Amino acid sequence: MRPHVPALNLAPELLLRAQNVKVAFFDVDGVLTDGGLYFGEYPPGDDRATQHEGFTTGGETLKRFNTLDGHGLKLLQRAGITPAVITGRDSVVLRSRLHALGVTHTHYGTEDKRPAAEITLKELGLDWSQAAFMGDDWPDLPVMRRVAFSCAPANAHVEVKALATHVTQARGGDGAVREFCDLLMVASGRYAALLQEYTA
Image 1 (cartoon, rainbow, N blue to C red):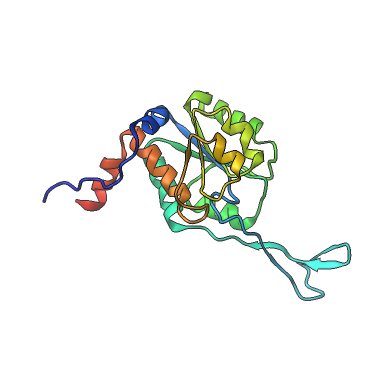
Image 2 (image 1 turned 135 degrees about the vertical axis):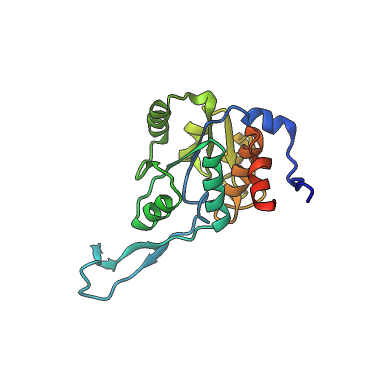
C-alpha cells in the first residue's frame, strides 16, 4: 500500500514562523468553546443555588467542546508540543475536559494572562520565542504580543484578528483549535508521521 500523502497545504512563511514552537497556550471561551455561556437555574430550596440581588441561579453549568479540537490537543502532545490553558473562568466541567485530554499546564480564573504564561514558560524552561498563543478577545492581547506565533479563530474580536499571525477558517468551538494544532504539527515536522499511523 502506498503511503498516504497529506492533503493539508500551508503557506511556507506560516510554517517558518511556527517552526520553533514548543508550548502552545489556549484561551477557553471563544476558542475551545463557541463563546456561549449556558446558565442554569435550580429549583427553590436546592442547596446548589446561589442568591444574587434577589435572583436564584445555579451559575454556569454547561460548556460545548469539539472532538476535533480535543484530538488535536492530544496529537499536539505527541508531536512534542506542550498545550497549556489560561482562562478567566473556572468550572468542574472545564477541569474534567482538560484532565481527560491530558492537559496539565492550566491556569483558571486568571484575567491577567501574561504572568500566568510566564509561570508556565519558567516551569518548562522555555521563553517567548518558543511559545504560541490562541485567543479571541482583548485579555489575550498581552500574551499574543509576546509569543513567536499568535492565532485567532474566525469569530475573534477585530483587534485580535488584526494582531494575529494567523486567523483560522473555523470559529472557536467548531474546529479552530484543531486547525491551529495541525499547523503547529506540520511546522514541527511531525504531522505526516502521525497521520501515517492512521492510514497505514
